[in-house]
Structure formats: C-alpha cells, structure tokens
Amino acid sequence: MTARFARFLRFGVLAVTGLILTWGEYAVASEPIRVGMTVSSTGRFALAAQAGARGAQIWVDDVNRRGGIMIGGEQRLVELIELDDRSDKQMVARVYENLINDRNVDVLFGPFGSTLTGAAAHVTEKYGKFLIIWSASSDKIYEQGYNYVVSGSQIAASLLGAPAVRLIHSLGIKKIAFAYLDEPFPAGMAKGAAKLAEDLGIEVTMMEKFAKGTKDFSIMFLKAKATGAQAIYPVGYEGEQMAMARQLREMNIDFPLVYMVYASQAQFLAIGEDADYIFSQTLMHEKVNWKVTDGLNRGQVAERYDELFPNAAYPADFQTALAYSAGAVLEKIITTADSLDPATMKQAAISLSGKITVMTGPYEILDTGKQVKMEFVIMQNQGGGAEVVYPPEVRTAQPIFPVPKFEER
Image (cartoon, rainbow, N blue to C red; front, side, top):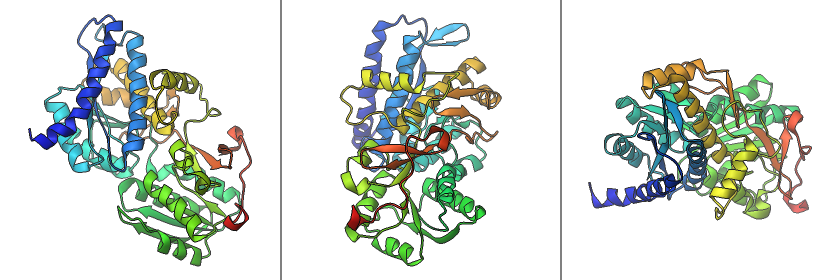
C-alpha cells in the first residue's frame, strides 16, 4: 500500500473505530453484518456525501439499538465501515476494492452521486457484491446489465425533474432554457426534464452543457436570456449552483423563474440574498411525512440526527434522508432474503417493489434495480426560508411568480 493511499484510508479507520466503541451498549450475539461505503472528506462532493453518511449512521445506530438484524435465526449487529474517496472516481475504484478484499464487507452502500457510484458499481459487480444506491440517479447505471445493484431511495434522473416541470407548466411558462454539467446525473436529469417539458407543450429554447470545473457561467446565462426563456433550469452539483446564483445577481440577469436542485439546502441558503426566490426540491421537510411501513419516520430521523450529531454545521437534509431510507430498504431486503447472498438479496429487492414505504416515500424498482418512485417536493426560497410550493396537497405557501427583479428586491 502506498503512503498516499494509506492517508486516504485513515479517515475511514477513524469512522469505523467510533462505531465499534459504541457497541459496548449492546449484547453481541454473533459476527456483525459488515457494510462498506466511501465518503468524500474533501472535494466538490464533500458536503453532500457527509450529509448522506450521517443518514447511514442513523440507520446503523437504530438497527443496533434494536439488537441488530435477524438473519439465519440470529440477531446480528451492523458494522459500518467508511473510507475516504476524496470526491475522486479513480480513488473510488481502489477504495471499493479495499472494502471488498481487505475489509471483507458483506454488503456495500454507494458513494455520493452518479459519477462516483458508476465507478463503484463496476467494482462491486466484478466481485459479485450487493450494492445499495442512495444518491446516484443516472439511468445509465441501470443499463449496464448489473445483477446486484439496487437503488434503495434515489429516483432515476430521467424522472427526477418531473415535479419541477409540472410546477413550471402550471404557472403558464411557455419557454424554458436548460443547462447541465457534462456528467451522468446532471445530463440525465436535464434531458428527462426537457423531454417532459416538450411533451407538455413548453418550448425548450436552449440545451447547453458545461464542463467540470467551470467557474464563469455568464455566457451561458446571456445565451439563455437571448432565447427569450422565461425559466432557466441549470443542473449541476451544489458548488456549481451556488456560484450560478451569485453570478445571476452580480450580472443583474433576471428570469421570472430559476430552478436549482440544491437551493433549499441549509448550506445553499447560507449564501444569503443570492439564494432568494430560487425554486428547488427536497425530501426532508416538516410537511413531508409519509406513513412508513419500515424504518423511522421523518420526525424520528430528525430527532435522532440532533441526538447523534449535536455539533453538525447543518441540519438533516434530503441527502441524509435518502441515505437513511436506503438503509431501511437494505434492512428489509436482508430480512426478506434471510441471507447476504447477492442473488438472493436482488430477488428479495424485486419482490418488495411496491410493497413498502420508507421516510422518503414508496419504494418501487424495475428489475434492473432502477428506482421509479420517491418523488421530491418543490421548494422556493421566500426570504424567510424555504417553503413547499408543489404539489398542492402538501403546499405550505403559494409560489412567488414571477419573482421580483433584482433591482426591485
């Protein structure tokens, strides 16, 4: 092992040690179920990855408080092994091999996002290990013929933008411009949303892609404005979208509606007035309360989050919710299969489709493992915070549309 690789692994060793130390509170009846995952300590995925990791940790804590998972007639605790991927897809492949070959994990959680998860899935399938996905939404992952990959909670990218487009249509918007980071998740979401927009009779005036590392989005915004678009829908990760929000205000470029996936996240709202009036989406809001059949409900997850992470910089968010829910689904798959054999688990995962509901909503997958339920609600940052504006049955405020021009705010 190289010295550099050893430094990457140190983050995970500390995480595992912390979990093992808490086991003294429980009676250990047999070998634990070892669940491996990677978490980004640095890089562009770090905030979201760490928020998700806390959701996985809540699931492990809850399972172990209940004495573990019943399998083969024995209650077995769960040991979560987290290693660092540094937001690097090349690193992901090496670390997942380490989890499988050196850490001897039984089951794997995906990393954050489609880019990293695509690399992880290639490794887990190569070694015949079951992979539960909590954030990756790229449809391409499910087109590779993988046998042991299942999305526990993240809806497919081609379906992810549907609620936002339905809201946009309901507001009477006739022209919309799309832009997306040239990576699997953003591309899939933008293209799926654009197709639905066209199906609903909305003219797509622009379909622009941008490269990883782009810092200046001014030309993209000016081009969208020149097309006469009433709404702009740029898809990227949190860092890119926060930069976009700042630049729109700096350049004084107004659109009646701006939609950005991450704009209701606490860290996004922390940028202040640059975040005002932007539409976004979430699965973690006090008004989103599914009647769960498996696992904790939203309120219980929020309480457990505050208990376990009192010093966290931000409250639980939809990444936390997605990862927790994937854990609850994984637990149900294991108990239904009564086995850790990946083929048996995959069959159990398919058999549960349409039959269980976790805190993020109904679980329903295709035979490929692609999640087709668990739609997000649409939020708008209305100055005092984010409000649910769609769908109407869970709305906490009416959408503000068109949004005030920058010079009028």
